[in-house]
Image (cartoon, rainbow, N blue to C red):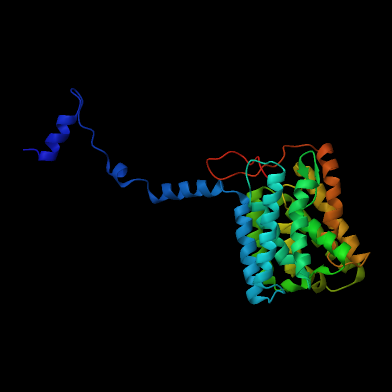
Length: 313
């Protein structure tokens, strides 16, 4: 005789149809491999800025804990809060439909990593300049300057009491490699690994070529390349998808121009932070490069299941 539950199940089946018994695979659900693929698809759809915020936060924590960066938690809070508040106010004034905190967080964290000053109010003002520039300095709907880069250059140029210290990251090859690995994840997710790789390759060629011309030992350019500062610049500043040229050919040209300009600033004008000054100057050429070498404009991918970003710049 059939068990009682079998009789009830059979009675509920439509006439003329046999009972469908699920397979063991259907009962068990997706396999670990299937679950892994599904998780990978979700991760692939995440906004690259989430990765960048995570990496910058880890770098800031490491710098404050292990490298004794000249910044305290109170100033970090003030800079980040000001960046978010400026983004919120500018979003309301621009009548945008949605407040987007990611870009403001990136600008705030980047300023915490790079900007140094003895006047806390100048650090707060830099956050306002960085985020506000995205809404004000625009050409054909695209902001011209990398927000953090513009804030650093403007504050250093105007006040004389702000600086970016390249030596604060040390010259440990292991740290530079770890920083490069984390940065490669970010730029690959954002589709801007080309500009990063071309800049680093051009910068390396220029430094080694200069050493060969002057007869310096190879250890001198290698020491410069092992510093965390140029790696941080290459992976987290020049690679900004919203301020680099739209086409790949344009980005390659842009990276070469920035590296060449940095060389002139650093070894001909003898200014420190050559890449920062060069990026600010070369950014003025991006609208022209986009016109000569047009391509589809970058759009941030929003969270899974939502449309492309159409809100904050």
